[in-house]
Figure 1 (tube, one colour):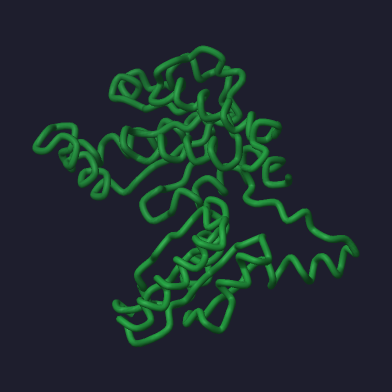
Figure 2: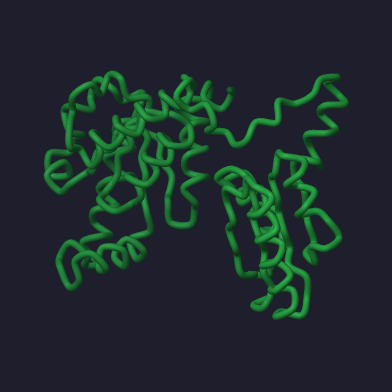
Length: 274
């Protein structure tokens, strides 16, 4: 569907609408055009979005798909009105109203998950975790590793940094990461700073061909990016992790979300309950 559009419309950041909508769309082979419209928090903005949706319907000759998370009834009524020529999928109406009936109470109709961020302990913990992960990225610091929830190890460019930041941002996990380098392989042991924290270590590995491609983008035609060097580093890293009893998985064909969930399951299963 190269000529079909999907709108994500929200009175907040739109993260919920887009995350849920993309999960549904992933069940189809279609790749429609995505249009994000966050902070639709007034009647004028809602009418403007409806006008945009209708123009797209005219230009594409078919109705756009519209995922909405709109708390305010008056604003939602504008977008769900028959005058909007999109297929409107109202996630709050689909889920909140049945839950109100089940719980026997009205929802608080709060706009967005971040509206009271300054008062949220969870939000504060996530900010602390992000700062921790940035300070302990790529082996920059061995200080306070006792405070880490997870320490990722693996060769350079295997996905440690994005995984660490995802764990911090989405789960409030203090994740440090350490690169395994040729000097470690020559010594046949992990960096000494990691020895007291082996129970927190989790390894990432990667297909050497894919690693060579990634490194070539950063340092083309270097020994660092050479395929044979990548093969040797991956072999040595896996051997080192095996010797120290560190579990690992390959990041080659897995998303950051899948990697992070596996790490939480194996290292911090308590953080999967909240």
